[in-house]
Length: 255
Ligand code: PEP
Image (cartoon, rainbow, N blue to C red; front, top):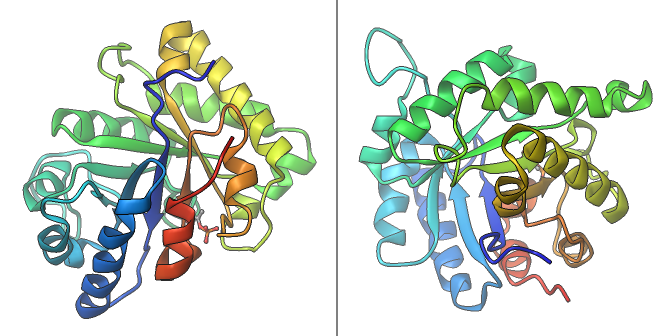
């Protein structure tokens, strides 16, 4: 049985998109959509848009997230933003280890692990992303990759530290490609990941941790993905930029 701790979460990742005016407009639509949402909702916006979106979302149930953070609280790290700064600007969550950060900016599991420490210290809910590339899937390395990313990313923390952590399974081959994992593929990977969480910190921890699916989630496929017993929500890129599509995703229907 799904744990009541695993309240479904739909998180939109706006990536490096939208002007301030567009961010405000979309945030207003998401706030309006929260009334008919089936679970919790979050939006991960560009650093520059955080204060204006925080203002729009004030008093609503929609959570505000950063898309990344540095592992230090402050200092000589030109161009970086710390978890403390995100918190101060109005965020409650932060995405860590997104595959675009891993692939385009060389982010390692060790760095994800350090960022996780900073996010937890700042009181942010981290969404830690893991997922295999197409080549890794085709050469039967999916399970090894997921195991390594989970073990490396979560290393050194006690289950109590990680009580609010959210994992996002994002097969790299499905991100921004229009190729979604089938509900069965998503379920298989989520079950595997839950097994890894159990191996790390026991069954109660594994059963209480939300695992989101990400990779070309749309208004059309969200219901079948959310119907899977180990899929606790979605991390949505492209479709989160379209108000109507995202509102429908927020209002997913699952048995
Ligand atoms: C993402 O970037 O996290 C993502 C899942 O993107 P998309 O929905 O566009 O595939």
